[in-house]
Image (cartoon, rainbow, N blue to C red; front, side, top):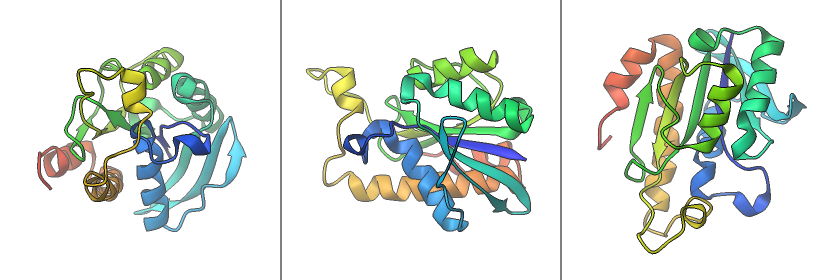
Length: 190
């Protein structure tokens, strides 16, 4: 069984913001695989289903970004998964161009507070992740304002495609492995 967690903030005011790229990609994955993410458990919205023969729990932590690890840890403990083998986290990355994906088998938080909290709560950084580029902040802008801001009109179609690409990448990770997904999706232009 896999837990696939998309990170974001739960309030309606955050819908469609850069920081909610993980939620958006998880929604795309759920839609592609006809999984309803509506149950409430372990401080997350969850949905159970099958993707390419693998049992999955899709999760959108409702703890707000900076405490995402609390929910992810509760889910991992409850379902007795090994994060190194059965956890995939999808989240935004300001160090990548809008729409660009970067898949890794493990690694640091890279300054992302949600990932810092997950790593702290799990006690390991050895779990798969899909980073979705949301673009660097403009020099004159505060980082919080940037990640909680919405995409410009011309960026929206690019981001919608990146959410679909992230969903496809997770599917590849489930049936061919993370290395195969890295080979297919860790490119600038898909």
